[in-house]
Length: 382
Length: 186
Image 1 (tube, rainbow over the protein chains, first blue to last red):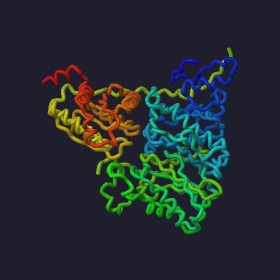
Image 2: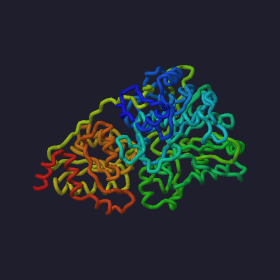
Image 3: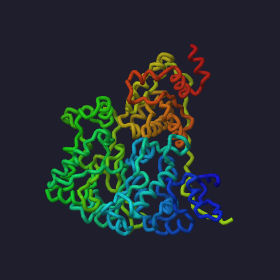
Image 4: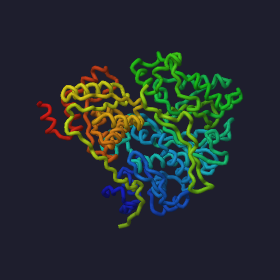
């Protein structure tokens, strides 16, 4: 195997020795993969991906934490090739990496936390269908090329450009310190099922126009299933969801940040037919998804209430701690196919998801959805 | 031999960053800031260090607390520490995001001219040094105590601060082991 190229070398020659498979082995040996075989990022392949991008190949999409290396479209393309993407996915990837670089997303902390947060890439609007993404049955699982490889490409960028690879500090770049990690760290990408949503598309609800395609990134745990085959009213289904969310171990209970409830279409339909708008459903979950203080150990509650800024509010809460700091921090959308399942995705807590417009019509224009009014941090002690 | 040319997916050059280390010649009678990130028992570790420095150098300790460990300290708080103190001790560097942001706080304080030491658990010592290196702050010092610091009784955590721990803090803040030895001998 060749010596590890220095980071600044733009290209690298690899001896084939009559076996193309050696390239993937070499890339693995250099620590440039996620552990699975990759497609070699040849100059020709990378050039095709750059040609499909919204920005020029040398355009800088930002510095990726924690290493802080600038990410050019060309490097994004190299990682996208490796992940098995198609060139047509490039605009989605450009939006995703732009969104994750918004400071309040806290990529710096997310990359190095012991918490098992994956980077969820959620695609909205026409771009999802154009890329052939799955928004229906099994959308968070295996089987769709765009879903699988877009999430993988972003992960490779976080490792190869951001410099965060998992480990116990056993090598210079082993600074992703997740205690256990999550399978969703391999890849986690799906599309919103707007066609089955009883409410306006998520991208519109966060302030983008109906014509826009968009990408949302969030630092979430793997999806936690919520099964309710029996309830036939919106309130009953929301009650099941709220009780599932009311768990003392989630970061969001004590740190805030936002979180996602991804409703299966059947649950969403029942909830909407019962008269719940999206804000009404958010308000219901905010009021009912609460963790009773006697379900939290005293020492944990003491620290958690400090971090969460509600140490002096426990009486006001009636001894029941809301799992979010504001109703709008509980993000609701629809994805998936037939069946009576939904998913809850709590975040790392010290993070707010970001939604970025995919600027197809106006190349070079990047628009981030307005921040939530609640998306503010104060580190001052009470 | 046939060769394939590939594009390096890691090739972005990181801008050279350098955070100079500030040091105080002597801690005697100085005001030292103690910045807790609210991790469990961070205050106890800082209490132990403060008591050690008060005994040796008659320092005046000031405690500062940031509420959320996984984000950076407010600019106003960092400015206040810089205005009121000559040196600062930051705790606790004992998990991933909290240590990485504590390292960022150390860099911010160092850039404001303060001598700085971070309190790391031994399971996050190497990690914290990696994060400091990324920030061009390799020279900033750490004092290391046995992991874990959280999830144990406060008095057990405080007992992890021993004379050698204080020695490491003094070296980090003054940068001179020889001076440390002479000071200890006084």
